[in-house]
Structures are given as C-alpha cells and as structure tokens.
Amino acid sequence: MKKLKKMDILFLCIFVVLLIYALVTGKFAWFKAWTTQSPYLASFVKFAVLATFGECLALRIKTGSYYRKGFGLAPRVLAWGVLGVFVYIIFTIFAAGAWPLLETLGFTTPPEGFGLTAILVSFTISVTVNVLWAPVLMVLHKVSDNRIENTNGSLLRYLTSKLDIAQLLREVDWNVMWGFVIKKTIPLFWIPAHTITFLLPPYLRVLCAAVLSVVLGVILSLAAQTARRRKQAPNVGAK
Image (cartoon, rainbow, N blue to C red):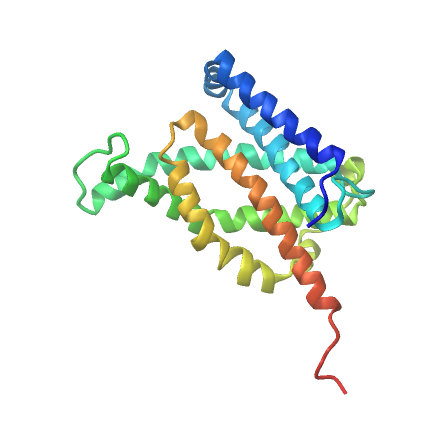
C-alpha cells in the first residue's frame, strides 16, 4: 500500500468539505433541480469528474502518483463525459421498459416504495442493462483507453488522428475483458450494485452510477495491469 501523500489528504479534505457543505446548506435541492432540468449536461459533468477521478485513483494505486506524462487527462474527461450521456439515455430507456416487461410475465402489482415488487423491478432493470448494454460500455471504454495511449494522451491527436476501430479492437486483451471484466464483475458486482441504484429516485441514479464508475475505473485499470504482468511473465514451460 502506497503511503498517503499531500495530494491524498487534499482530495480527502475536499470530499469531506463538499459533503458537509451539501448536507448543512441543503444544496441537494439545487442538485435535484439541476439534474432534472439539464439531465444531459448533468450526466456529462458527473461522469467527466467522477469517472476520471476513478482512473486517477487507479493510477495512484499502481504508481503512487495521480498523473503521469501521456496519461491523457483531457481526452479521458471528454470520453467519460460522453459515456455519461449514454448512461443517462440507457438508464431512461431500460427503466421505462422494466415494468411493462414484468407485466407480460404476469405481474400485476405496481411497484411502490422499497417493497418486493420495487426490488424486482430494480433487479430487472439492472440485469437487462448489465447483460444487454454494459459489455458495450466496457469495450468502448477500453477502445478509448487504447486510443489515448496510442495518441500519447494528446487531446488534439485523440480527436483528429486517423481512427482505426479494427486495430483498436485487436489491441483489447479479450481474455481479460471476457474472463474478468465481463464474466466476473457483471454478475458479482454490477448487477447487485445497480439493483440498489435503481431503487433510488431517478435524479440520483446517474450520480450513483458515476460514483460506481470510480470503481469501474479502478477495476479496468487493475485488469489492464494484470494483463501486462501476464504478458511480461516468463514462459515457465519454455526450454
């Protein structure tokens, strides 16, 4: 475990101060209004800030520093912001379709509060989101990561250089992507976590997903580190 640095303490203090400020001054009312009135912008900002911080945190865990040359802070902020907008769209679509789907299966009691039907609806949304869409998000994120690395973290090159999707997909370690990121994290973490997320009021769901994306950034970064170690490991069976 890396020792705490001044930057760690600064981040912790900022988080605590913002949390206390929001709780004491009642700014959650403003947050609710902003999220409701400007959902796309709000989703962009939440993911741009929180998910990018998750990647900085993963870098801190691996290297002891929140930033390094070629990390590509600006393109990561942009990429996560755009993905945040997609998250809002997908959440809206799947949440609207969950109850009608359950009705086709014979359920007749509408969800209320935190009852069993509400939990079932949240679970249905979580399963459909994570099975039908989350893998696409994870692959898109990895493709974006590969492009950032290939363009040395330059926002200008990230936006303007030739885009070779086929090559970026070939650079994905599919053993890790399928064997760890998709096959393990979706059923063991994301489905339970998003079941809780969809029990929350709609204006809090994208924020909760953005907080969870901090975990996603750490998971994907550690998965990439595992892949690199495996590639660098000597072939024990070789003679």
